[in-house]
Image 1 (tube, rainbow, N blue to C red):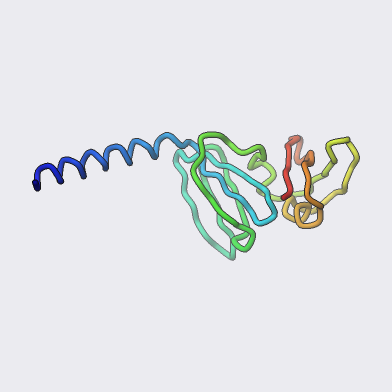
Image 2 (cartoon, rainbow, N blue to C red):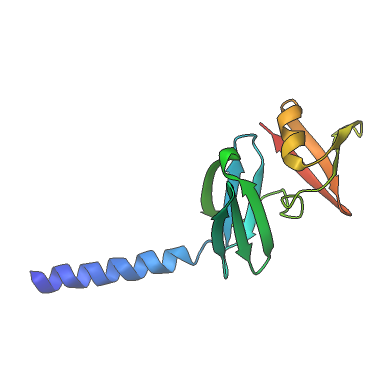
Length: 132
């Protein structure tokens, strides 16, 4: 009986370990509805001054801890690139191309915009943003 139990535990451990490698991204969702992903490979997460900083092979992602709603491993990268996550001036447009404003950061834009899908321009990149 002990051998059978031990064999089952070893088998379950192997299956659980293999399943973790199926998820190449760690995705973070904020209370404002913004979803951002970082590569799980070589991921290091640190906390300082009320912020969470995720360092990975893909780049860095910085989030305010107060804004963080949930995080989970996923198979696909979120629609919003981590390029906007670092901060900086962003220009936001509606899906019809109407400029909604210029904001000091993406988090400021999310806090001021009504629910909807937007186009964000930041540092030469154009990204999609969903505000929930």
